Length: 159
Image (tube, rainbow, N blue to C red; front, side, top):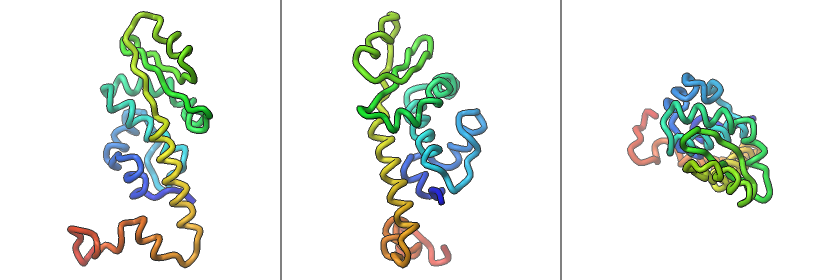
C-alpha cells in the first residue's frame, strides 16, 4: 500500500508534470503511484532545493544529498543540509559546528532546513495509510480527498 498521486501532490506541493520533468532530468525515480514514503521524502527535498537553485544546480546538489534523505528524515535531533553556493558542495549537518566547518571555506553557504517539510510528509503518509487500512470509514476518506467530486468547488457532475 502506498500514497496516491493526489496525496503526493497535496503533501509535496509539486504537480505530477513537474515531477515528470525532474525524472527526465535524472533527479527522481520514474513517477508512478502508489508512492512510498521514501519517494515522497525525496520529492520534498528536491522541491526545497529547486526553490533556491536552477535545475542543473539542483541536480548536482541533490545527487550529494539523496543517499542521506532517509537518515535525515529519521534523525533526532533534526539535521539540515548546508550547500556551498559557489562549488555546489552539499552535505547533511547535525550541529552548529558542522555548519561552521562547511562555511569555513570562505564561500557563501545556504542552510536548507527540511525538517518541517519531511515531518509533514511523514504525517500525511501516516494519515493516508491509516485511512486506507480502517475499513468502513468512508466519511474520513472523503474528507481527506476533499469530498465527493460533485461537492468540490468548480467540479462538474461528470467528474
